[in-house]
Image 1: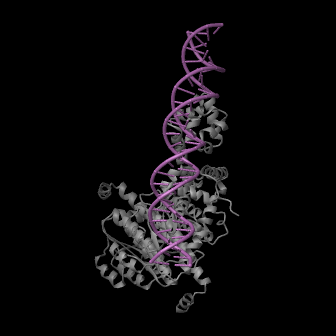
Image 2: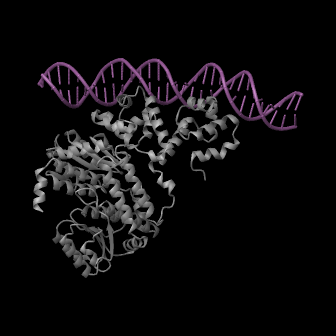
Image 3: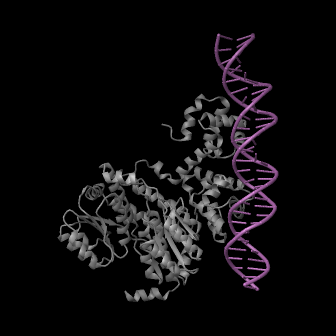
Length: 275
Length: 275
DNA sequence: GGAGCGCTGTATCGTATGTTACGTATTTTG
DNA sequence: CAAAATACGTAACATACGATACAGCGCTCC
């Protein structure tokens, strides 16, 4: 079976006329970036004319050049999302049904943090730690436990931390307490819940600063969010994984705690003495 | 010094207006492929208009959109040639406050799974999937969200899954429902809670099979447990990490679901048709 | 509460891009 | 060696893409 375009090319390169073969060779040599450029650039690099490039992609089975480029991009996307380890270690030690799940999860975490800058996290931490306002947390069907987990920790190191539980009508009533100085942390991954989106929109209209934990496809709530944390969720399972978001949450919890300690918060000292 | 575009974005994302920030977030979330598509596609993905995208790239210092795309392609080319240097955040490796936390968490997971045999997991899966009995889940102060998370998933693929919430007195009343055929999943890490230990002991006396998620120092509940999963929890933070246990929980959820599918469970088919 | 500023989207424009038609060159085959 | 078929490039075309002008709106700051 032919899976990649590169494979497809080397499979058919023998049957191609000279000009198209030059195109194929240039593409393989600079795979796949030349194919993402314009036809003119591609043709110049290969030393052939534009129509030759188009005939080349047509021979590969694509209807037109944009379709060919989309295929290359999809391939790249798959490659970038599952880092090299997967292709380099096809069968990692242990090999049971466990390992692929673990490997994918570890990849997800690395990838999630790779897309997360220190500065972004620092901004969120500053907002959570520095502020006099209140912090509200809420999650979706499967992610609400993450909101609970984070709330359980944050509520210890600072006052005015509230987890919004129960039915939608109950949250809405809490909106009355929320204002510009407050922060709303929302967890929402596919399939995104309408109720959460509506809630986020209303909170946003009230000036609440929203921190969104979502997946890489971004919940519609991203429209209203001041900060967006996009975690990878794909694993070889019937379910999506929230593990990467969980680790980000733990990282934030730790950073906020450290920040408050650094600020010499009286509360922390009081906590120590209570133990 | 700013070397990558991703870094450039996270550096300036704070100074951007809302619309352009949405553009920045979608680009970072799907870095960098969205940026290689057309302005129209990019704008649609970000939920803003085309000019906003163009203003966004202009703010990053590019003269026009093609120049921006070329820069992304150059960056991609460098990444593809040396897979080792795949660093979107050059600041994180070693440097920032983020990385040690992530590294420790990844180590914890590898270590946790290293001490976890496939057979042990398979036994637990078999017990959870094969049985006609009920499944109860409960957790401690910080781990109860993990119990909730697991319950939320298991309750979908099989009936008779109950999360025990609220106060101790409420759990005790549920003991009347538990018998030999039932399973009790308990999450308990330091500092172990007396109330959970007492509850586990009573349940054990009633013949309930206990699956314990705990840390490497083992909760006293391990005495009564049929299966013990010991996860690593140490991280450079004021708090312990439950991330490793979380991943084990997700692994179990996935395995149970797969097992039930393999068993041709009618419930799974019914679920599919309900969607 | 009003005036000014800045941000965003709609609509329009110019242009670069992919596409196609056609003529020439090159190879292949009887 | 001749004739036909295939391959290739030049040039004209149409589409769709990026760019821009402008108006509406919300926001902030007097």
